[in-house]
Length: 261
Image 1 (cartoon, rainbow, N blue to C red):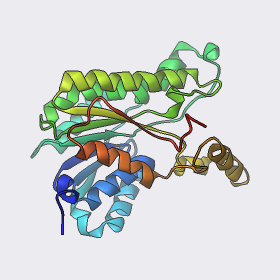
Image 2 (image 1 turned 90 degrees about the vertical axis):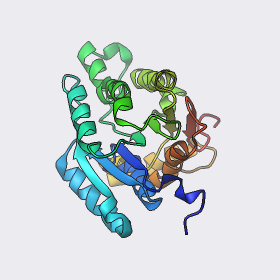
Image 3 (image 1 turned 45 degrees about the vertical axis):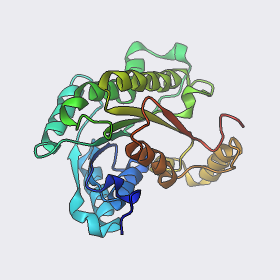
């Protein structure tokens, strides 16, 4: 039986950009288990279809409460148009209550002095331009109330950048500033940011198996908990921001104590 705590997301309409894998997938799964009506987006139809099948299998009682929309955020010339088309489609009957942004793409790590302008701009297409455009459009498609929220995703690189991560650190920090500005501009809709540390997602599958354990061990050694995060653990932070109507302009760090180690 739903209690006053577990029912807070019942029938809430949630959009998760980047919901086909990693943290976004777990946020979508978690919200479904709490009774939300969830739309996930991805840049590719194949990934979207696979994720929808997995979600419906994981939460069979909520199979009719999840759907998907393809939305490519990689080209800044079409990002606004793609976002608006998606938002119009999924809010034809009712507005959204919550938007979660976990979308990302490949990161190019190199000294900031080696970046060409085009590569530097490309690095921010999904990480900064898309969230900024989304924030500008969102209010037209959401319930304008303190119970509604937008949650972005930055990273510990903005607070403790590794060598050659300067450009990424700049975008991470900029996204957190963007969220605070939007919290003021969109109030009473709440806007917050989750800053994850190392999280063991599908992205690690790109690392050769003979190197993977060494990479994970390196991440574990740089934490106080001696662990690497899981997408399921990270989803708790996003659910918190959806459910707590008193949280806005805030940052939650989930990194195993990396910034203190």
